[in-house]
Image (cartoon, rainbow, N blue to C red; front, side, top):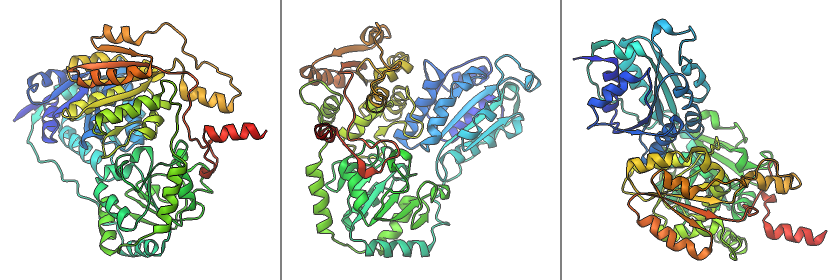
Length: 563
């Protein structure tokens, strides 16, 4: 059948099973939006307040569902407004296809109105980027984009299409999407045998789960491995939920704001099994002394991650779930009672602590966990609230924490929450932000209201840029350069002005009633929770220090008393 390029784009989306897209129209992409008008009963388009919100929503949709997220934007500033969201997805291995439209071919390279080389701009932050200037190549390019986005280590792909291609016509024939098989060709038998020997020989094994554990869908296998060899488990921010935070073997997050038990335990282990983690500097601290007493076994689908940041003793390249299935066929049960007793003793000795005499972020998050029973999808922005969420909300399942780990994108969470709610409407969805982050993309409250679905936005409002201020307190002699937000911004009034219900919370006793009201509402609710500006996130490892140098407020008080 003869279709325009714009209609071919939409038909290709249907081929790939896309039911929801996020975007913002403009001149160059008008033909595509005109085609979407005809398909409105088959593809749900969510109009965001800003293109960056569309990219974060596509990202959140992908993380929450495991499917490819899709966002659309016009040329020039529309396309460049996607860049931060594309980079966020790239750093966290999120499958996403961004489709932009550019000026017509005769206008390319002439500094035309709203012309920009978006395919060139995003080249370092995508798995692949295309510009389509020939309608004959359009359908196959869209299909390749989806395959690349979800195969191997997932990530974003951009397809830029000139406006004349969206208007041209050609014969279109539908195809079934290419099947993405779990890559097994690189899983070498000798590597598996080496890993089995290391695990059998270990007396103090420790498992460290990264984002790859979530992406691969390996939760069942990770849990089985941990219990079969009786190994304590820690995770990275991106690995949350791949191993249940309620499991007795769970020790908490590893790294800069990880638990003392995780940091000290990894430092005492004789074998560290690393599942889909890239050894971020926020996890390892001083990479030269990381897991200093352990042999390290790294399992990752991306060969480039092996020996990149930390030199390991052995590795297996391949999909984590597939690798673990092969390992589990060869690993017998092994008990480590003394090691587990030592870990449990540390958990009892070094619990997470916060001030219970006043309203704090941890108190709000613990109460949220209690009321949702850990069954919500939680998105966050970046900063203190993000770390408190990772520490105090026990994630039981994968794809329930959506957060910008690699890029650290302020303003990410609300768009991601909208995407998650559209992808999994049956789940309670809550975004937790600081006031600095909320300011960046709070216009997406209008999008949430327009979508008409329940969604809870919690703002932990300390009227400062909390994480930066914490560093200024600890390492910059209390020089608070441009981190105090002492202005007249009223988040309750702003949220109400966009059509949402809003509640201000200033006391501990107000938290539970406000959360219950928000969770029971049939539309978006914003909770503006005022907390003290000098609250800090502990434990903490200073940047570049050894992870067993982890300290908390009790340690700081002891140090002050000894001086």
